[in-house]
Length: 214
Image 1 (cartoon, rainbow, N blue to C red):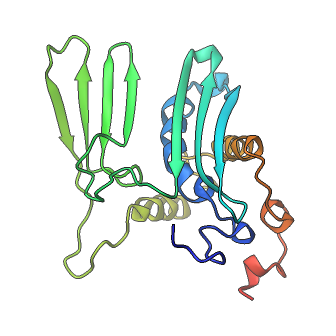
Image 2: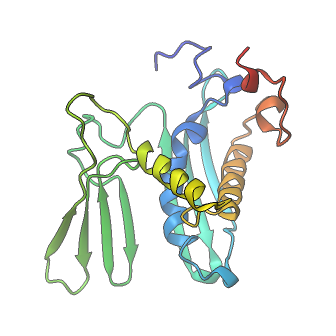
Image 3: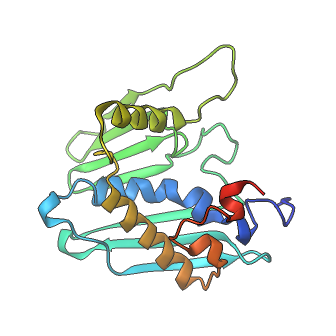
């Protein structure tokens, strides 16, 4: 990696590291499938969480692998993240799927970057080898190159919530956000990652350099 040690990607004082920057994408797919779809009245948080973490010389995690298990649901998700490699080695995502969702009746393969997939494939156990491909191209703007990168979906959902007077999104409720943060915390703790109090605190401080831009 050629990051300067002060770069936000590798600076613990700026919440650098693979889990904080990229791990959320693989974890989001795990949470959406294995947690979000559970009946609300029977929500089961994951336990145990098992992780392996590789540390960079600045003190952040440069790579992490983790297993998130839901014993009552008899399900588990396996996630990986790293600052050294991408889902598509050639950056064209011409290789295998970034995400696989496997079950007793078959599997779904998510193609393209995890944060902005362009298609997915459905392969049924009794499908006789048939693969159904569903294209979901993302919006394009001829005047801008690489714009949005998937964040427009977040912006749209935020706008809908504001329009409808909602304090939280049903797509990603607050309780799910907290559970997701707890998983990230567990992974980093197992990797013995240490971050400054200004990063870890849940108390808003208007004088914090993270909030005042100084």
